[in-house]
Structures are given as structure tokens and as C-alpha cells.
Amino acid sequence: MNKEVKDQAKPSFRSGLTWRAIMGLIAIALLFIPTNIFMNLSTGMMISTAAIYILAILFSELTRYGARPLSKQEMYIVYSTVGTIAGAVPAYYWLVYRAFFVASPVTYAYRVNGIPVPYLVPDWIVPLGVKTYTLRTLFHPAWIKPIMVFTIFLIFGLLGDLGLTIFLSYIAVEVDKLPFPFATVDASLIETITTRETSRTRAFIAGFYPGLIYGALLYGGYGLGVPILPLPWADFTWFTEKYIPGALIGISTDPMSFVLGLIIPASSAFAMLLGSAMVWILLNYVFTINPQIFPLWASEYYRGMSLNTIYQRSFQRIWISPQFGLALGLALALVTTIGKRVWRVLKSIAKAGIKGRVEYFPSLSMGIVFFLIGSIGSSLMLYLLIPQLPLYLILMASLGVSFAIALVAVYSIGEIGFFPQMPWPWQAIVYMTPYQGVAAWIMSPYICYGTPGFWSQSVKVAYLTETTPKDYFKAITIAVVLNAVVGLLVMDAFWRLAPIPSSAYPASIIYWPLYATNDCLFITRQIRLDPVLIAGSAALAYGMVVLSNIIKSFPAIPLIMGCYMLPPQAITVFIGSFIGNYVLARYLRKEMWESIKGVFGAGLLSGVGVFVGIYVALTLISKAAWVWPW
Image (cartoon, rainbow, N blue to C red; front, side):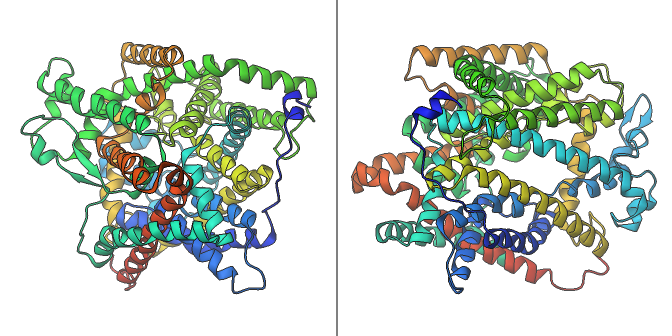
């Protein structure tokens, strides 16, 4: 047994994975996965994080009509997994998209060595021939092979994420005791709706009513077809392009950004704003008015581009290489910084043997084994399917890149509560090879995209709510399985009901051709990656972290993460931080504000969540008519 663990007092944990919690997870899957998929296909949006708060509240209130309300631990299990069940696009969603990919005229315009892209897609990704697309069902013999392949990779991916989360969350939560800012909000909501303690309830209500009003302004108009506030941001580039062309100027209307600002220190919020402004405002402007630096971007820019369009094109033409390099540099620096602690944990595992474990935490040895099975298993599987790629490269990507991204995700979310989606790490690796084909651009071995960071935050919430962390890992496994199984059935049902894309699902008409175009740009290597920019950015990030270890007040991680955050988000985070740290803290006294800010933020998001639910209901009612002829 780890001596460090022996020396610590055993926390007081209780189990939350009861039959009532499991039945709640099943009910949420059956009720809200169809809603989430329909919203995505119809509006391009998904059940937001704010909606998860109201789902937790509704489920808690329903159980109060029974013999016994949910305990704090049971509520934690439901709340911590509802996002995975109802808020994530199911894996099999992409099978229908791939069917569209090989049948769309868009993809036939792109060629590899003179051959149209759809002709190079193997039958283990999508059945060949238009018939499988026109029949509109996943339950056809032709789909057996793609479904089997997707399922195997799904299992390997789950094992990989579970393994990394078990190992890294132990270091981040148990050893380093990172704050995980949003964990306070989550734990506060759970405590408030289960204990109903007076002071917490007052703080919750104080945030709930402003959230309710803001939710009405933000989502109520969309439900009625008359938007009042724009989503996801107010775009001001139409005005600022006269003075700073190419800059991304706007203000996010997403309440999560504001609540993040309320929670984090002002220094972190300012560092994130500074990093965001340097990249997306200053440098975007410089590269736009100096076309010789990035001529492709300069040739594509034109006056009148929206914020979203500027982001997409400048990201592809300028920032994909630097952002990939920043992530690698930050990962290397974190490995160097916490390497001793990681090595100490590994040695303790070796001394304890394969059975050594923390009593209330999953076996760390098991976590390492899960990660190795997920990475090595998926790598061997991909090599069997695509032997043109060298096995050593696949293994290095799955093992090394996954660990690096997971480490950055855990420590970024642990320190500042934010982690961006990494810019296509597998495609960047394939780009560096002479590979000529399609399959390797579409399918990858297990590559971590940051999930262990968010799951580690849930582990922190388990500690705050005194729930056995082992229960969370069991519950999240159940949640992933429910999301996949119910998602498969629902996608098949929606596809049978009407073609996808079609007017029955308006957002798919807009976004699926864009997805297909983006895939084809990678496949035909029209999106370029620069090894020099990647290396230079990695060196810059590494140097910043080293500097922060020397100058303790230098916020390296928030500054680097700000480079990934768009200015609308960064500005809203800064506004929230200013109000929280300099207005509310002064008005309520700093000590009181620190004790209630998590509860207040939970109330604010819960209020917004009420109108997310109303918006979903209005959307479903508006689409309730018979869909024929689409």
C-alpha cells in the first residue's frame, strides 16, 4: 500500500450507485437522448450544460414524492453522468453522417490521385453503394461490419479514457489537490437541492431568478421563432473590421463563460483574456494587413466575414499548427513539472503489486492496464485495417499524444476550469506521413481529446459530496453504454422517419456538407501543417511554464489556455471575474462571497436551464406535424 496514502486520514465516503440512481440514468437516457439528437439535427445545438442543472433538479423533486428522496451521494451519481448520457452525440450518429459522406455530390468534387474521395472509403467505415443510403436504416446486413468496427473502437476508447482518468485524477485530486473551480459549483448544486440548508438555499435562489430572466431572454425568443439575444455570441466584427480587419470581436452570451468568471481569480481571467486577445485580435489583424506572412489566409479574407467564418478560416490557414504545438509544449512542461510526483505514484504501485489500491479509489494498476489495453488494442486494430501506416507511429500517437493531452486537460481544468478541444491531433500526425488514401483520415486509434479532464473534475465533486469515487467510474461506464445503445436506436428511427440531411432536420442541411468539406480538405491535404510552427510554439509554451516555476506569479497555464479561447468567451469570463471579485465580493464581504459563489453560480445556471427546457419543448411542438414530404 502506498505509504503516502497510509499517512492520510481516510475520508468519509458513502456509496451513491444504488438501484434508484441506475433507474434514473436509464430514464434520462430514454427521455433526453432523442431530444438531444433531434436538437442537433434541427438547430445545430445540443442540450447545454445549463440544461443538465434543471434535469438534476427535476429528478430530485420527482423522487421527493416517493418514500424517500435521493441522498446526496445518489444525486451526485445522477448529476455527474447526465451530461454523458443526454448531452453527448452518440458514436453511431457518425455512421449516418458517413453514409451521407459517400453519397454527397460535395465529396465527389475532391480527388486523391485522380480518384473521387467516396470511391476510396472502405466498406468497414460505411457500406459501399447508394442503396444503403437510400434504404435509410442502420439495421441492414450491409451495416454489420461498420457497426462492429465502431463498437470495438468505442470500447477501446472507453478503456483508454477510464484508465487515464483513474491514474491522473488520483494525482490531481488526491495528491496535488487542485481546486477544479467548477467542481465547487457542481457540489454546491447537489448539496443545495438535497439538504435544503437555509443559507445555501438563499444564495441559490439569489442566482436562480436572474438566471431565469436571462434564460427567458436568451432561449425564449428562439423557441418562439423571434430571437431576442444572439447565440452563442454577439458578433461585432461588422463594425470593428473597419479599424482592425481580421480580428474576432464579440461578447459571448453563453452563461457558462460568465459563471466561470465568477468562480476563478481575477488574475487567471485577465491572463486568459490577454492570451485570447494576443492571438485572435492582435495577430489575426497583423496577418490580415500583411498578406505576405500567410498568403492563403489573406487571399480568403474579405470584408463582411462573420466572426464564425473568420475563426474557421484563420484557424485552418494560420492557427492549427501553432495551437497543436502549444499543446505539446504545455504537455512536455507539465510532465517535467509533475514528473517526480508521477514517478513516486508509479513506484508505490510497483511496490504494492497489481492488487495494491486505495480502498475508496479504483486500483491505479487497473487504470494503467485499462489505458494500455485501450491504446495498444486500438492501435493493433487500426494497423490491421490500414497496414499502410507504420505500427510504431500509431502506437506512439495513441500512447504518447493521448497521455500528453490528458495531462494538459486535467491540469488546465484543475487550475482554471477550462480546456479547449484539441485541433485534430491524429490528422496532424497523418499529415506528416506519405499516406495516400481516405481511411486513416477518418478513423484513428484511441486518441484522448480531453475527456479525462472533465471526468477528473467529477472525481473532485465526488470528494466534495463524500461519494465513493469508485462509484463514479462504474456510473460513467453505464452512462457511455446507455448513450451508445439508445443513440443507435434513436438515430435509426430518425433516419427512417426522414432523410438526413433534409428539411425535416434543417441544421443537418447546413452543417453536414461543411463537415464533409472539412474532411475532404484534410484528405486532399489542402489544410497545411507547418512543422517549424509546431516546434516553435511548443518551445514557447515550454518556456512559459518554466518561467512560471521561477516567477510564481506568472500565470502560464491561464495565458496558454487563453490562446485557445475566442475573445467573446474571454471577454465574458473577464466581465464575470470583475463582477465577482470586485463588485459582489466588496458588497457582500470577501469571506461571505467566497463561501457562496459556487451556490450562486449553480442557481444562475439552473435558472437558465429552466428556459432551456422550455425551448426544447417549444421546438419539439413546432416540429410535431407529419414530416412528409420532408
